[in-house]
Length: 426
Ligand SMILES: *Cc1c(COP(=O)(O)O)cnc(C)c1O
Image: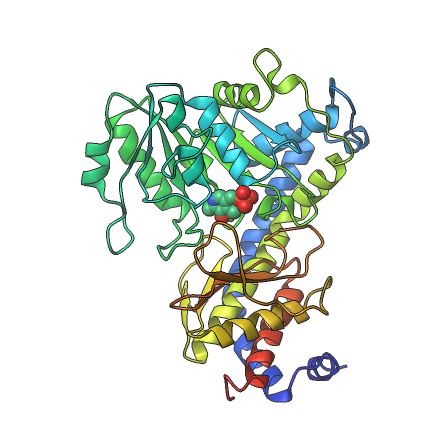
């Protein structure tokens, strides 16, 4: 059966299939480079499994206190091997990426210390943790201060301001790799390495952590390979490979991981407790699949940028620039276009494909938000999903795709809906 015929069966108009397949044809070289990186990372992950003697016994979990949880402890060694760090904390008790970042900040900082972000405003959910926005339990309540060096207008580091922001109180520097939902570029690992080098030339003993969300396994190296003391992320994004049902990780220097573990559990217990229940196997399998799943999501993002840029829409990153995470934003220019786009993504989903997403007022946002996600795991953004605030410039954020074919089909369906709604003429 030809691809065109299966697309017709799936409800795609012939001109939409044709346009998308033509676009895909132009991406062979870029996809080959992504496949090369995925293969390198696949073997890096495999070697970490083998070097740590992952065994059948590791696949089952413990209950209660979770003493002697060989699966959990070995998984943490595997993560440490993948990130080339001394130690790691990989736990189902870490509820999300925000929680993992909060554990790291609270684990390392003490009253009187100062936190510095040299890359501008951090991810939204960190504002309450730091106390940028007043919140119960923030670092600010405990007498921990915060300083921020904004990026220059072109998105590069403002070295002068960073130099002047480092003082005797600066204990920890936090660098966010992905742009998240901002318009700045995502940093490459080598850019992060340069920034780390600069910071260490001013204050060698300062701790440096990287919010690694959405960046894992996109490149051959990670921020921990270029001097970061700690990397932090969510298991319902890249490293969970779509199979991890919950969890977060922190990988880094032994001394810092021990402090994070104490913060996660309690003084005196640290890493020793925390039953893994039944998730070990899924966390292993997810990490094992993560290099190819991440590559699929990345191909989907590149395909989306190429389809929509060809139609005249502004895409960030654009169709040709290099990628350092899996997020794609497309400026669609109207609420109607955002709704049609999301409808298409939803129609392409394996779960809840029969529902139509609509804008709604969501807590924490000052305007309506639309989201499309037909997920196996609630909120998982390594699965095909799209969302965005219904406000100028009407940009949609697209990410994920457990397989390349599914990510591709999601984009095809989004275009099909835009064509059906009369927003685009091919
Ligand atoms: C997703 C994300 C987070 C937080 O993740 P949650 O799991 O939603 O709490 C933090 N930083 C960045 C850059 C992210 O993309």
